Image 1 (cartoon, rainbow, N blue to C red):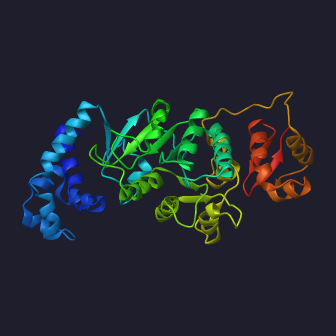
Image 2 (image 1 turned 45 degrees about the vertical axis):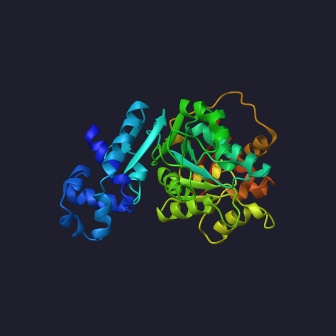
Image 3 (image 1 turned 120 degrees about the vertical axis):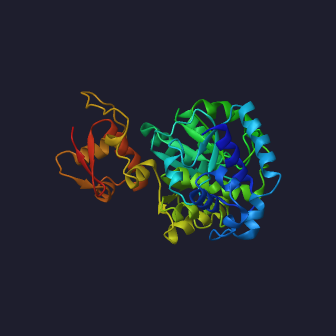
Length: 368
């Protein structure tokens, strides 16, 4: 994209009441953002869904002046961008009808890794939710996924910090320009995020973290990812909006259950009850649901070893599987007298150690 192309794209993005769906319609009709501004008002008004009101916002005298100021800011601060018609634009977001026409980004984001999951939830995360979030990300780290979240308090920052700890890429989706960070207390994490990941936003440097921006930001969180996981949520909250958007994009939505009396689990429990999300208790569930089999991942296969240390739970499962054909997950849990939520991750570890092999239908086979 040339500087001139970027200028007119910024101007289109700035036009009031011109959302991303309408902007894409205009670009398709006129050929490019520049041609939209050169087109006669009468022609623009004749386009279905545009009319005189939206045409006036495009023809506003100050739009190109504001766009030029923002362009200067982007160039001065070496801020990178993705245009929705370019190859570098996030592939999954490109498939979303209301995906931003222009995204700004910083850091070292590498979207070639296609295992991308968004993790969202309450800003008032409980100790239970925090431990669960950290455990899931640690277990997923063997597959080197990208963790996406909103860089807010609670669940968001827990997910980002856990990704950093496990040396996997993380992306923070912001509800304001890249010239600031909200909340300010999270500034201390900027460097670590950008070292292996970064930040994305559709908002200009003149944008503040206003309430409506967070709702718009949520569609980027949902659109970037293959699936969205809600850790904890009250009856109402931004994470539930993100889950709804992910469902509208036909993406997978997962939720961790909580006790019925916990206020911060009402939202997630309702998602599961209303079949708006699949119940998840471990990373193994996510790997199975998304078909993120280790044999398809970038992780090199682990060859069976002569001497492998096993913990007590692993020993119990291995002893049960020896000499048997394929055994389903429920049978393993009942026979070994172990809860399913605790053996899912154990089975994953045994698979990585080259001791068992998974099969469709949540079946497992001992291979020695």
